[in-house]
Length: 396
Image (cartoon, rainbow, N blue to C red; front, side, top):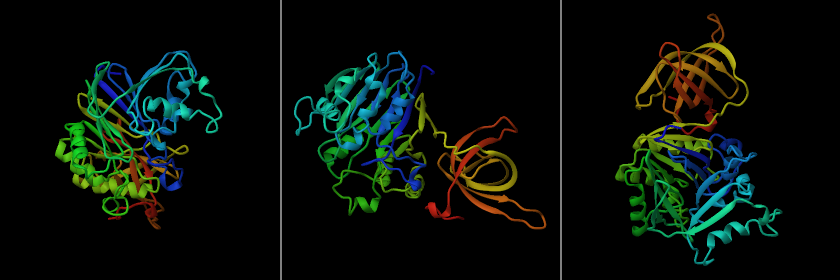
C-alpha cells in the first residue's frame, strides 16, 4: 500500500440485528464492523458486530503463523455491536495481539469492556470456553472528550445521544480523517455539539441513518438513531467531503435504502450508502470508493445494442448508445463513454429480436463497478439488475 493511503473496509453495516432477506442482499445484513488500515499499517477495528466474522475470515493469518495486531474501538455494548466476538478467528491464535477501547458502563462498573467480551463466552451462552481465546488482550477505558495517539493516528472520542451511552470516534491519519458516529439521535444540544466537533472537516463521515426523517420525528423518537436528512445537514455544516449512510434498519429493504441514498444525493452529492464489503481508499484526503464483487454466476459474452441513460459522476444526466458485452440473469457489463456514479441507477433498453420483429427489453441497473477500459477511452461499467418492484425511483 502507498505510504500515504488509508484503507477503510465495511464488513457489517446493518443495525439492531443481522438480516438475511432476498430484498436486502445488495447492502448486506451483517451488524456493525469496520476495518481501517492506516498508511503505516496500523490496524483499527470499529465495533464487533457479526461483520467481525467476515473480517476474520479475510485476515492473512487466519490459518498461518504471522502475528497481527489491532486496536479495537467499541462504541457501546448493545448486542449488534459486540455479537461477532466469539466468531472472530484471530482471537483464538496465540501470536495475535489486540488492544480494546471503550467506556465504563454505569451498569457494570470497572472493566466493563472486559466483562462484556468475556461474558459472551460464558456458560450457557456459548459452547467454547474463554481459555481457548489465546490471543493477547489489553483493555483501556476511555471517556468522551479523551484524545490520544495510536502509532501516528490521532484519536478523539465524544459522547453521542444513545440509550445507555455511546462513543463516536474521529481518527486523523496522514492520509485523511475518518469519523465513525453511529447510534446517535439529534436533539440534545451538548451531544449535537459533540457530533459537530467530531465531523468538522472529515474526509469520510460515517453516520447513523437508520430512520427515515418521518420516523425520527414520530414513531422512532427516543430510539437513539438518526436519518439521512440529519446526516446531510451536518455534512454541509461541518465541511464534510464524503457522507456514508450507515446502520441500516433491519427492516429497510434495498429499495428503501436506494430511496434514502437518492434523496440524500439531491442535497449532498458525495453521499454513499454503506454496503457489506465496500472499501474506501483515502489518499491525500481524496476518497475512492469501491463496492464488493457482487457477480452471481458466470457472465456470458453477448453483443446487444442498448440505449443507456443515467447520471455521470458530476451529476449530469446522460443518454447514449452502447453495446452490452456480458450478461447473466442478475447483472451485466458494458462500455460507456460516460462514467456513472457508483450506487447510481441507470436505465438500459436492450434491442433484441430482429429488424422485422424487434423485442426491446427495458432494464434498470445499480452501478457496482466503474473503471477505465482499454479500448477507445471508454469506461467499463458493471451493473446489478433491479426489478421495478424493488426500486424507489421512477422510470423516466
